[in-house]
Image 1 (cartoon, helix red, strand yellow):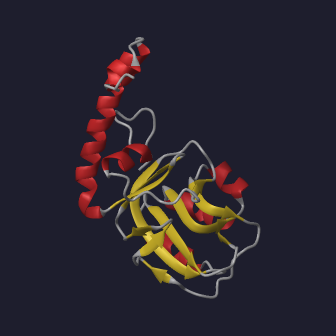
Image 2: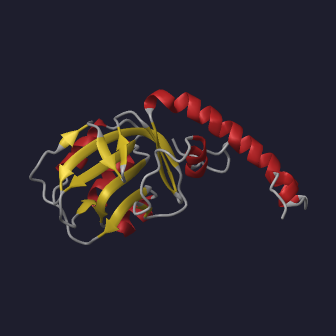
Length: 203
C-alpha cells in the first residue's frame, strides 16, 4: 500500500531500519528513480540471467494488487530489466512498486506514470525474452535475502525488508517510534534545546 502525509503514522525506511537494528536494509546502490514515493507491500520475487527479463513479466502476473515486485539479475550484462511497456501493464495491474537489482530504462515513462521504481543502474539497452527465469523463490536483492511474502518498505532513503513472520511486531515498534519522534518534533519546533529533548550529553 502507498504511504503518504495523510497517514496517522508514517512508515519510513529509516524507522524500519532503526527498530530492526539496521538489519534488512538493502545496499545504497539501489536508488529511487522517481523520488517522492513511499511504498509498503508484500514481495513477489523473481530471478533471471542478466540480459533477459521474461521472468519480470511472469512475476507481474503473479503479483497481488498493492504488491512490490523484487527482481534480481544474475551475471554480467547491463540491460534494462524494466522498461516502458511493462510499466503500463504494472500500472493497470495495480502494482505498488518495483525493486530491480540490475538496470532499468525508459525512466521518463515510469516517472510520468507515477510508478515508483528503484534500481542499481539506468541503461538504454533492452533485454531479451529468452529465459523464463525463476518465480517466487528466495532471492538476494541489494545484499538482503527477500522471500516471497516478505514486506518491502521503500522510499527516497532506500529499501528495507521485513520478514513475513515479523511484520506485526516491527510495524508496532515503528508506530511507537514515530509517535515518540512526533512529540520530540513538537518540542523542537517550540524552541527547546535538542540536548534537553533528546537527552544528549553536554560537553
